Length: 105
Image (tube, rainbow, N blue to C red; front, side, top):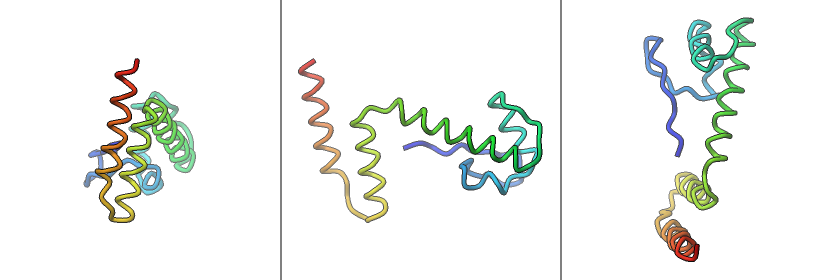
């Protein structure tokens, strides 16, 4: 699972997610945009929008790098968190299938 980025520039540590970007201060937005080599010009709404787009792009890139099995495991884990079920058996099955696929290559 993707680990949230943290920012400690403000008084408290905040998870850097698209959901909480709009509550950030302009200086924090500019800091995160600058770290990504993105423009720091514009109104707060423009900065927030630019940072949210960057975070979503980063998330898409990370998911694009994951194998189909890893994506399935993530999906099972997320579903288990929501439903309270235990995903170990399904993940064990995926691991066995993955291992057998590797041995055939």
